[in-house]
Length: 220
Image (cartoon, rainbow, N blue to C red; front, side, top):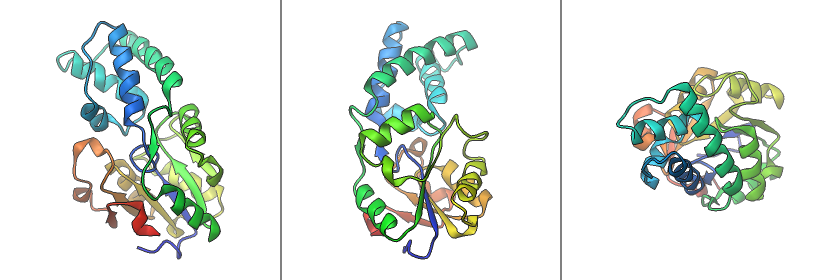
């Protein structure tokens, strides 16, 4: 797959650019400890990533409480605890996936516009990008709380394309989840799925992306 013919590339964050599961795992377990609930494992965290941190917290509470959904008060209390712990540890255990920095450098060299489109809150998104020293590559960040709709809604992709003055059909989305694929297809752009991401433990191929790669190094 050659990216030289596209005008803009949109990247998902967690599970695509950055392996952030260990940070999230630490924060969730600290939250559960404060709530006198049993800890969870890293594989569960990887399966729960993809719909924003509030949904991650809800899934952790539901799983730990015999699959009973938390009430709103409990969920908000837990989310506040999680956010405080995550704010303290975000980026501490996270690492870039292979090929990320090299691909971003190559895209910038080719004057390709680059955006990050994630359901993670902007505060944590910006910090992760800065901690991993790649924030300078992104012209636009569409996060879970700075645009009016989240993926799988196509709006963040359409907004990103408009922000960099590029037709959506000239853009490519790269992500690890079914939400990335659905958003791209609805927006009208091609989508490359990475097989190494989280995607709730499901094989990404079953959601029919245009291309599947096992590493971003394949795009160099």
